[in-house]
Length: 164
Ligand SMILES: [Zn+2]
Image 1: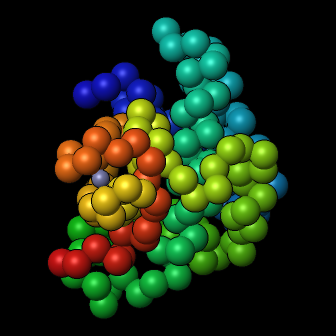
Image 2 (image 1 turned 60 degrees about the vertical axis):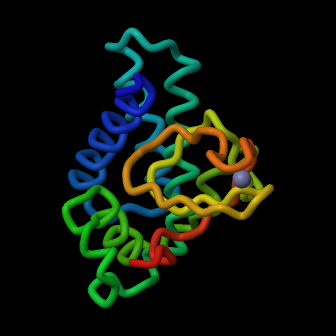
């Protein structure tokens, strides 16, 4: 497993613990918890501070984009049942409770709905900007070039749009 994917998973697991210990979490608290997790992990790791900053940015972006999915009814979609054991399920429950202002989470991070190959995405459907080919990503994955046209730019769609 690539180092960054491993780091991403460690990040989300640590963040989950902090959120559960905190109870109700609003946007500001969530953003602070992400900072705390980053500081904690980079203190005891062979990854650089810049690497952890990058991972933290991926997590913020995933949380922000996740908002499209958490509003959907999981139980009515067969594909979503797969997520019940995953980190995304508690994130959905969390966001229901806390009315998080997700767009605030990513602040000035460059994003604008476009993903590049080489970036990491936690969960979602990516669509090649060149040929429209769609791929569902159910686990944290580093995006590779489009296997059809070698395109390097992608749009993201909610995983719930994936046809079962
Ligand atoms: Zn393509």
